[in-house]
Image 1 (cartoon, chains in turn purple, brown):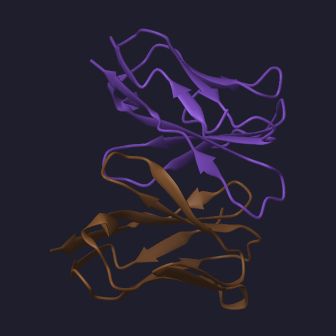
Image 2: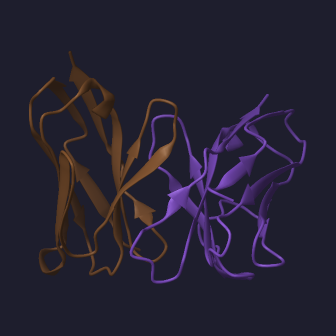
Image 3: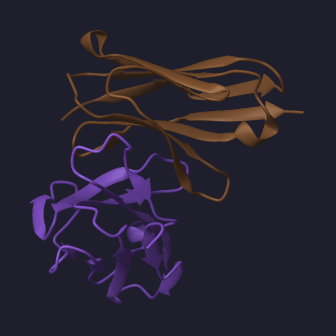
Length: 114
Length: 105
């Protein structure tokens, strides 16, 4: 596609509910990143994929967070047993390896846990 | 991990003024990118600039990798330049806290 697509755009979850957030990177982009951005803060790194391999998941805040990219294209970020502190915008970015053009971000998914 | 510091945290300008935003980082990097986050939350790629100087219209950026800093210059600022400017560094793109720019008409 022309850009990085994320869905849903907005998600309201009851505390304890599981959620799945989807990221469709730009076609052919090898690298894919997930970030969490709380209100008024900068994006915080969660995890990084190169193709289907998850090379870095050091930013995932707890074992309730899980990300996958099984075929090296679409990625899903899953949050189990959501808690109020999980409320944030979740951003996805993709790039070519060794790109001189940088990384492109999606519009994000705003998750609100009530 | 790499520490990224941006300054100033907040900047208020009158339309037409020039400004310089700074990004310091704690370790050598081969990736550095500047982003503008608009009021709707979209992060727009401004420059991919691990070293050297680039210009795009009223914006330019310089990274001095050996001294571990990058500068973003905005000339003749417009109200549409308002938003938060972030730098992100490293292969895993660690972000600074941003500079919130407000341009008043």
